[in-house]
Amino acid sequence: MTSLAPLSRAACIGGGVIGGGWIARFLLAGIDVKVFDPHPEAQRIVGEVLANAERAYGLLTNAPLLPRGRLTFCASLREAVTDAEWIQESVPERLDLKRRVLGEIDAAAPADALIGSSTSGLLPSDLQAELTHPERLFVAHPYNPVYLLPLVEIVGGTATAPATIERAKAVLDAIGMKGVVIAREIEAFVGDRLLEALWREALWLIKDDICDVETLDDVIRYSFGLRWAQMGLFQTYRIAGGEAGMRHFLAQFGPCLKWPWTKLTDVVDLDDALVEKIGAQSDAQAAGLSIRELERIRDENLVGIVQALKAGRGGEGWGAGKLLADFEQRLLAQASPPETPDLSAPLALVETRVSPAWIDYNGHMTEHRYLQVFGDTTDALLRLIGVDLAYVEAGHSYYTVETHIRHLDEAKLGEELRSTCQIVAADEKRIHVFHRLFAGAPAREVATAEQMLLHVDTKAGRAAPAPGTVLARLRPIVDAHARLDVPPEAGRSIGRKREPVIA
Ligand SMILES: NC(=O)C1=CN([C@@H]2O[C@H](COP(=O)(O)OP(=O)(O)OC[C@H]3O[C@@H](n4cnc5c(N)ncnc54)[C@H](O)[C@@H]3O)[C@@H](O)[C@H]2O)C=CC1
Ligand SMILES: C[N+](C)(C)CC(=O)CC(=O)[O-]
Image (tube, rainbow, N blue to C red; front, side, top):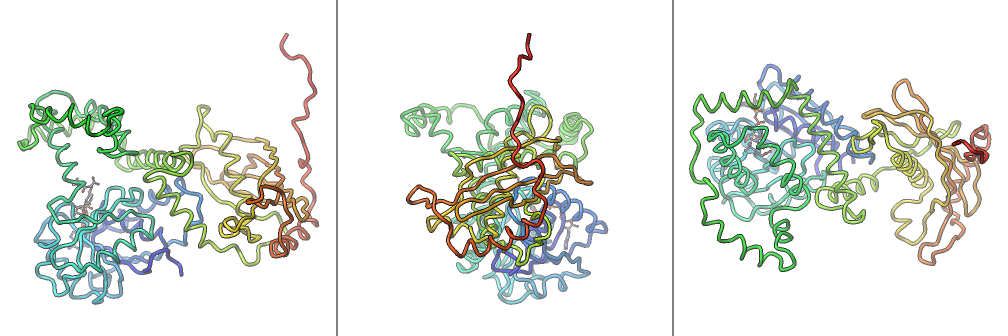
C-alpha cells in the first residue's frame, strides 16, 4: 500500500486556490491525482501551490511521509475521472456551472466513486438534483490552505447515502484531515455561517470609517484570533464566565445581544467606492508582498501554531496539534525500516528541515531542537532493531541516560537537515551511539551528539537485558561499525580547566 487512505486514485476538477490545495493534500498523502482544469496556466498555478505545500510539510513534520502520489493533467474531464475513487469538484461558485460539471462527472465516473463538492455554501440537495447517482454526492467543504488546515465539513443532501458520508469521513480521517459531519444541510453550513457574519460586520466597520483594514486585522490577530486556534467560541466563553462558567457568561452577556451591537442582517452595498477603498487599504497593508510570499508567511505561521498545539496539554497534544500527533503516529507505524541498510558507513537515519518554531532570538536553530533531531535519530535506530511502538507498549524500551552535544555551526530557517548514527559499542543492556548532524547543500556538519542508551523493563522500572530478537538485529550493525574508525570526538567532555577569566 502506498497511501494511508482506503483509496489510491483521486481526481480534482478545477485546480485553482482550493482545487490546488486538494491536489497537494492528496498527493502528499501518497494518492495519485488526475486533474482537469481548462485554464491555460493551470499546470503552473498548481505547481506553485504544490511547491508551497511541500515546503510547509517539510517544516510541519519529521514523520516519514509516504512517497508523493503521481500527478497527471488531463485534456478532458472524462479522462480525469474515469478510474477515480474520489472526485473533488472545485470549480467557481455558480450553481449552473457546478450542476453541469457534476453532471459530466456523474456520467463518466465509476458508479461507486465518491464525489465531493468544495462549495462554500450551496446546498448538496440542489447540486445532486439532476444526477443519475445522487447517493454518492456530498459537500466536502475545506478551508484555505487545504494542505495545512485539516477541517472538512461533510454535508449530505436529501439523496446522499449514509454510507457515502461514512466513507468520506473515513478517507479524510486517514489522510490526517478532520471530517466533521454536519447534521442537517443549510446554506453556508457552519464555518461560512460564522465567517459571513464576521465579514458583514467588518465591511460595515470599514465603510463607516470606524477603522481601516489593518486596524481591523490587528484587532483579530492580537486577540480572539489567537484564542480561536486553540479553543473555539463556546469553550473560550465558558472560561470567560469565570468559576461559574457558561451559565454565568450567558447571564452576564446574554442581554447585550438585544443591544445595538451588530448590523448583522444589513448587507453592505459593495459599490465601486467601497471596493476601491478596501482594495487600496489592502494594497497598503501588503506592503509589496506578493500573494505567494504572503502564502509562505501564512504557512510558516500556521506550522508554528500547529506545532505549538502538538506540544499542548503537557505534551499530549491539543486540537489540531493532537490531530497532527496522531497522524504522525500512523505514519511512523506504517514506515518500514530499510531491509538492508548500508552498514559500511554510519547509518543515514533522519532527514528533516529547520522549522520556523525552531528558530530562537539569535536567528538560528535553538539548542533544544538539536536534541530533538538527535532524539529522532536514536528513535530511528531503535525502530531499525525492532524497538517500535508495539515493543514499547509491551513493556520494554531503551532510555537515554547520558547525552553530550557539540554545536559546530549554525542551522538556518528552512535548511535541510540530515543525521547519521554510528554505534561505538553495545552490550546486552547498553548502546553507545555517536550521531552527526549536517545542514544545507553542500552539507555542513553543524553538531554531534554522543548518547548512552539503556534497555529497561518499563513496568518494573529497572534496567534489563534486551531480548534475543533485538540483539539479533543489533549485532550486525555493531559488528559492521566496529570496522569503522571510532569518531575522534567520542568520549570528549567540555574539558576546560577551572581558571579565573573575569578580573
Ligand atoms: N477560495 C476559498 O477561500 C475557498 C473556496 N471554496 C470553494 O471552492 C470552489 C473553488 O473556488 P476557488 O478555488 O477559490 O476558485 P478559483 O477561481 O481559484 O478556481 C476555480 C478553478 O476552476 C477552474 N474551472 C472553471 N471552469 C471549470 C470547468 N468547467 N472544469 C474544470 N475546471 C474549471 C478555473 O479555471 C479555476 O482554475 C468554490 O466552490 C468555492 O466556494 C471553498 C473553501 C474556501
Ligand atoms: C470566502 N469563502 C466563503 C470562500 C471562505 C470559505 O469557504 C472557507 C475559508 O477558507 O475561509
